[in-house]
Image (cartoon, rainbow, N blue to C red; front, side, top):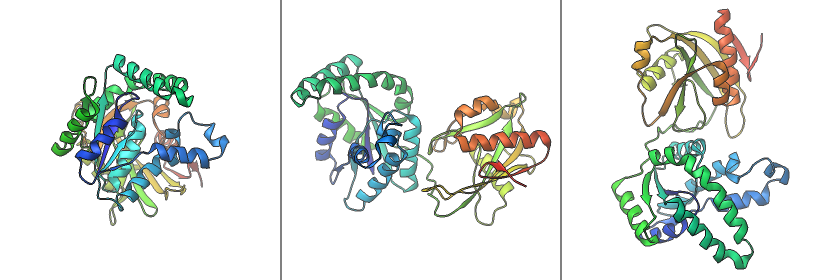
Length: 344
């Protein structure tokens, strides 16, 4: 298990984490910031210039998961992880990958009033002044208060909140330990196993009466997606699409959807690629749209969007697939794609 202590700078994550080690038997401190420091030493300077923060590096996010899994083979656990994580798509990627490895997460947000945060950041500046890094650390920490305020809505909804404004580090750790014992902060994310070979996946496009397409927001991976999923062994792809729509949205499609695009996705390590199919699920009436249901452990939101709006939400490979699927739908003829490019 991982006890992930989230919160902005000055919330007391590190001091509470050290206190928490005394309260959770067998626990070990796991600091992913060390991985970021290692990447800064190993990656070419040109690559580092492309990102503002090491969390923006896909390699860091993957290493966080791989290292946690490796550590848990060496220690009894749990791992206590004091790490600021303010971007929801990064939370989805990391926590989803941990869930795929059957590693449970207790997500705890250490929160404090902004005036308290600013005062703590100033004290940290004074403590680090002798090292010559105080002013730069203070400026960097203060700059993240705005990002924290923006992220607070989703953080408070996702994590168990402990207000540290008037708590000592020990008192904070005691509240976190009690939360862990009672199961608070448990992230019930769908446990989708990581693929070990190429996969066959079926997605279904559903439309409203304005010809907007339905997208869903998974909890276990970054970015928006189409309803659908992996085709099970021995299962027909179209039936897999129908099954996934029923499981994810509570919608029973009246007939077998017609194929729009078949796209071969090239392997890109660590991904294996495979064949991706998109089917036309037709137009949903207003009554059926109002009946949409979301499984909380798998999807957090849905929305109907235009093609232009979809480009802002979907990863490039999915948006390109959607773009050709919409054209195939308009022409009434399916398209065969290889790596997103029509062939034949």
